Length: 254
Ligand SMILES: NC(=O)c1ccc[n+]([C@@H]2O[C@H](COP(=O)([O-])OP(=O)(O)OC[C@H]3O[C@@H](n4cnc5c(N)ncnc54)[C@H](O)[C@@H]3O)[C@@H](O)[C@H]2O)c1
Picture (tube, rainbow, N blue to C red):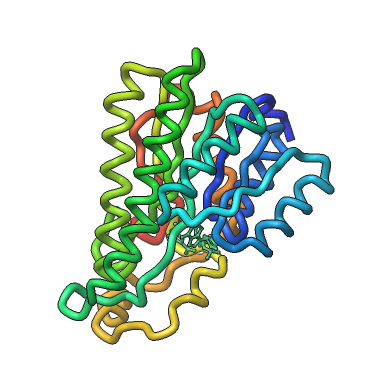
């Protein structure tokens, strides 16, 4: 550990599990003060305890990223508790059973868009309006997916939302990144060993058939993605702005 985030304040959404947990732990180990945001209160408390027991600084903010009042409270938690906000990691996300357009009902579409795109947009908006007032600006890291770059790594709702997240990343980079010292980049993970697979309860037949065309995905440990999130959040990546970096073990290169 090298204190790469010493003195920085970070919000990580979806911090109670998988990549969000690994990112939060790594950031805290690198000296960041971390606001752990997740809808799952019990697992969130366990992550907070793990981090503080290890000597790190973290506070929990129970947050439904689909709820704007929760998002505002999450950002206020960062500024009230730690005085500023330097890093936002939009990581929370859900899957959609690989359902294609013709079979996608409004309820699932709206839920996936709310969690995977509208929530990250509102969180970025709130964070940017804090970062704009800071001399050192800030950094936004969006956890997208190779589903944000290609057609069948998720269902239609997931694919549309993650493509939207990629678009938002580029827009922030081109505006605030060029003019206001607020960089934005996105990670596009391939397969990662997390709890998200357990939410694929009834995989759609057509969606699964299309996914099979892509071959077997190599599987990453969440810590391998946390390494990239750390790089993108730290000053080590100070000249990287508007990039979407795939971390998929070469899944999409063949
Ligand atoms: N695991 C993969 O293979 C993979 C691949 C590419 C991208 N991703 C993306 O990585 C991100 C993290 O996923 P993961 O694989 O670590 O999954 P995970 O299920 O292990 O963790 C996701 C966390 O998000 C939280 N969450 C869900 N809905 C929420 C809401 N409305 N508000 C706040 N928190 C909420 C969950 O409680 C959970 O703690 C997601 O955006 C996902 O789309 C995952």
